[in-house]
Image (tube, rainbow, N blue to C red; front, top):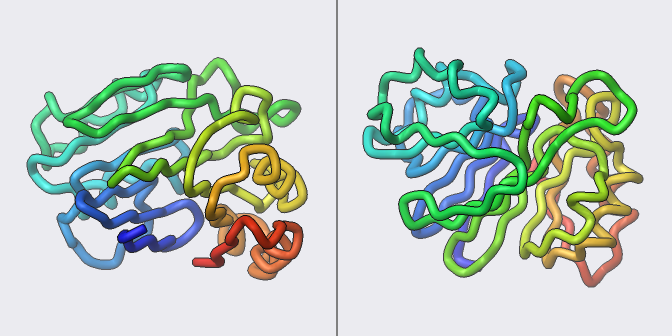
Amino acid sequence: MGVNIAVNVQSSIRIRGSKTIYFDPWQIEDEPHDADFVFVTHEHYDHFSPEDICRVLKFDGHLVVPLSMENMTADITTIPASHIVTVKPGEKREIARMMVEAYPAYNLSKPFHIKRNGWLGYVVTLDADKYYVAGDTDALPEISDIKCDVAFLPIGGTYTMDASEAAGLALRIRPKVVIPTHYGSVVGSPVDGDLFKGMIPRDIRCEILL
């Protein structure tokens, strides 16, 4: 897997291979303008930051957002409007030769992420590997059979699944690599990553990047 993966903070993720992809860029300190794609999972401030998106996107890059956010991207003027793409849960499509699958991301019994908002997790295919970024979600029935090589799962609890619930999801979808996110900053404790790693069997590699 010839890629470089970094988690900046919370769920701010960069995957660098033949293309450079960001998910929910936030608290980006410089202006790399290296993103071929930016994917936004939902509209909360720690996931949708127009300032940070503008810092990372190339002029010819593509921004992918949930359909429910189509009227929220007016401040992003660093790319052509035709490069802002909206998707909805259950949609699978190719965007600028990048295969993208959109999955629902919502809470089952908490009010923070409501199903009708149509917020998302994504599976993207880069250099023959599939990367699943769950977004802010509980361990939903709709995502229990996702096929991916690398899974980024939130573990902080409160607004998402907690470490135990995320470990259960990892056991069901069985990626080659699982990377915990969404803890140690806005919510959750810095030790949650180690707690989660202790719940993962050895045939699934767990990488702590926060």
